[in-house]
Image (tube, rainbow, N blue to C red):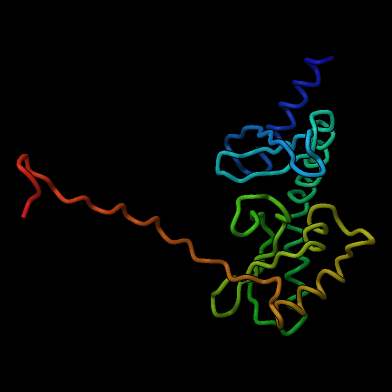
Length: 193
């Protein structure tokens, strides 16, 4: 029984790794503070540094893994379909966006995979905007449900992307890593002058 649970756990962890496009992972256990003191949070940290919160306490770990698999599997199964649906809505309205992509992105400023389902909008000028909003995320990872229907998600996206931009952030261009500073050359007797 224990071996079966362990092998299922490993299989589910590797499935999550594959679905997120990662090559390695490790499980991180961190103690909770405050109200949940005495409990532990479990997360999967992928080789790229991205971190996915699984749940609290070991007894819930396997069920929480299954839940996360269901969410990311739904996202991947419907990624192309959702991209086309969003493109069609943007084409039907007069928007300045020429391309759309549904993608996974960690939360800005961290590597946490929280609200990771995002819509990347390409403006006619070439700039890319990332639209991250909770209802849209849940639509992307779990489908058209009563509490986050597609029409409401798209109405909010159109309003925000073409106006306020409270949920749209410009995607920074990937720049090459900075070159390490060159150290001055030294001779045996001291610095070169």
